Amino acid sequence: MNYYLDIHILPDPEFKETVLMNAIYTKLHKALCDSQSTDIGVSFPNHNLTLGNTLRLHGTAEALDKIQCRNWIGSMSVYCQNSDIQSVPADVKFRTISRQQPTMSAAKLKRLIKRGSITEAEAKNYKAKMFTKGLDNPYVELVSGSNGHRHRRYIEFGSLHDNPVDGDFDQFGLSKTATIPWF
Image 1 (cartoon, rainbow, N blue to C red):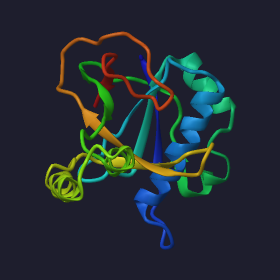
Image 2: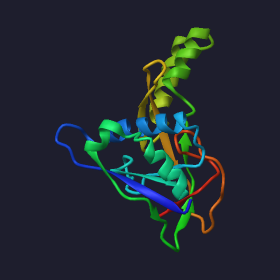
Image 3: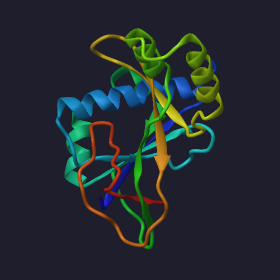
Image 4: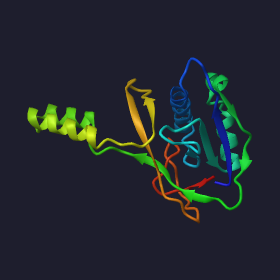
């Protein structure tokens, strides 16, 4: 994790920044799946209410070069500007960037109703709780390559640590245990 590269989304009058981030992140996910990569992590250094306008890839110089050689970004390159692969600055902190799953969801409610394990009144209560206990985390909205369904992947930013933790990243570039440099 000594190297990184930034993919900065350029302002566009036709597409919102979040729409472009969703499309670029979907392409990255496909590239990580195709290459079966577990050594590239991601971060969103400009996140706030949304994931922001920068997707940062972390890894070794070789891993980043290998994924970039796949030209995974394809036609989306007109909407962003890629930095060169650079060394991580000295004196940085480290954190995990992982997925946070809601405990209550519309899909879970559908399953409960289909199984008949929840009454109509309980379903109403479930919906009310679902909306009041929703996640406030920024998210990326992905489209499944297999069935075309949209789903949100909520992103959780772990606390800052002084030392890195090695480990594998999933094919979304996320990990509950492995850290990325944060700067």
